[in-house]
Image (cartoon, rainbow, N blue to C red; front, side, top):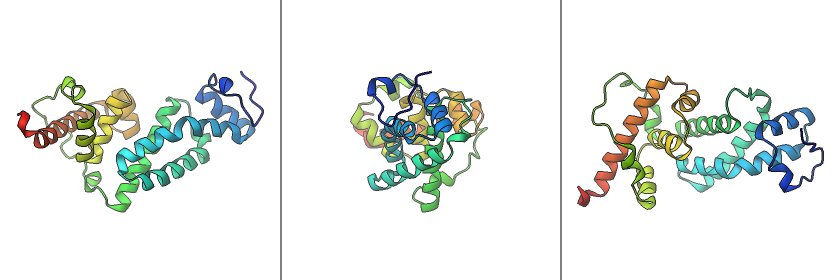
Length: 199
């Protein structure tokens, strides 16, 4: 294992250390330098995810600080059963959804999956999602409910597997597939409403 017992760590060395090793080193030594590396690796990504959900830069900045504090305080709870990045994403997602619920900014986060077992017709192909221009993609993602936006970002931006998404959302793989299917339909419906001239 690489010895990183100094507060000032060389950039080329820190790049070689895995997230999991940094967690172990921090827990063993309580040296804040290790957590600072984790902070630098993930603060920007966390901010981006919070911004995509909360739609407010100031709220996303505050949320990022709160989430990084949660990560620091709960580092010992990281079991290593999933990737560290997946664990962080889970904390970020859950914090953001709880925040939206408390602020009642997005009523859709209250809706239970009461249609979980209802068959959804008219499958939307991945190619439709991937061929949308970046500018239009951002607009449509901002227009659909946060729950739909989040699950699409998990699948297509973060390239998470159905199993990983299920672990974060605490849902079965079949339920996740159904949620993705519905989110894609919502995306296409909103796209059609915004760009009627193409249909």
